[in-house]
Length: 466
Image (cartoon, one colour):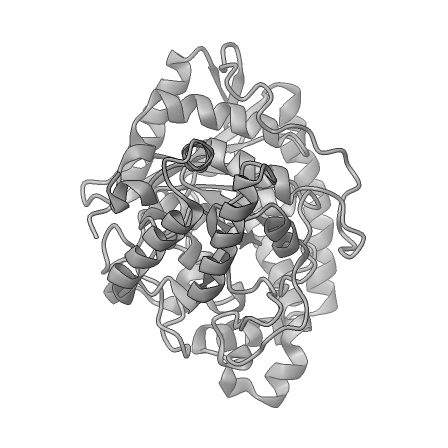
């Protein structure tokens, strides 16, 4: 098998090949490292590459598998981490000069879970600075580029995660999502990403942006791969005070059962025309995806988008207030260590009042009730993964990125599970995604709908020509 083909296997395919001895974990790691070496100078998806550690872990995985010690479907699989997950003894920067040389003395809970599952760590991935600003054009590390077109952004803030997966640098990655930071790069890079229910995955050891909105979750190149990753990541953690003590199901149970008679709510009215509206090519790809769902037996139901639209302001106010509270001491002491986009947003937070924050939280409760009430008549929501294709760096103002129309933040506000799946391309060959949202702790429903759509189309099989 050619190295390029090896790099684009699914996690499931790689696992079968390892156990049938078609290749070794060392060969998988070497293929990824060689591809990173050949192409990442253009993409800048990695901040820190842990090649020696990866090969050591791969050799250990091969040894264990050869003796019958099988840790599960992720054993020997190369993965990478957004660079806000604490890794003991490995630099963790948040793509910022503030933490440019920070080496944690502890691991994030999710990092421990992945290591215990036998994964192979390739390194730490670029992002938007502290997951707060726009693309980090004035940070100490280069901004990540989109492998589909290097002139365009990959989306954020989990930009390195999206780009690395699309480029075939790793088989799975972790992102974080406070207003869309897993699902937007998934949509912009033509891969799959799921924001689980709030509290489903531990955030201990993950540098926060907004305590009441932050989610951690997996990104991969297929729906099934995300389910495999989430199976390991999910679960109660006493070290995270927002962790939910809720039973973790088998996320693949029923995944292949189809979606006949499933009711899909589309909150188009009073939302899709928000601000400057949805890009016509993006909306066309979304509408074609809805037709595929109908052909699979789903029922499309129009629902009111007004509460979804109003959620944007509440989400942004809460996020900005909580982010400023976390960073205030450092910002007051050394403001110029932050990039310009983050500094601007810090100033927004400095001038928001307690009344602003409390009003946003009250609005949050009302809007969440209104949004969740729709589940009395539909089973899932379907919306675009992003309102527009990824912008070109030359046409972009990083300070305006958080003012763009968004189809993601209502589900952070309500903590609902949401998955983005590839659903097409623009005329400029830039990816688009469709997002499926289920009731709390029903990630399995997200996987079932996402898998049905994915298997009925070919979008997830497309590869960028880097």
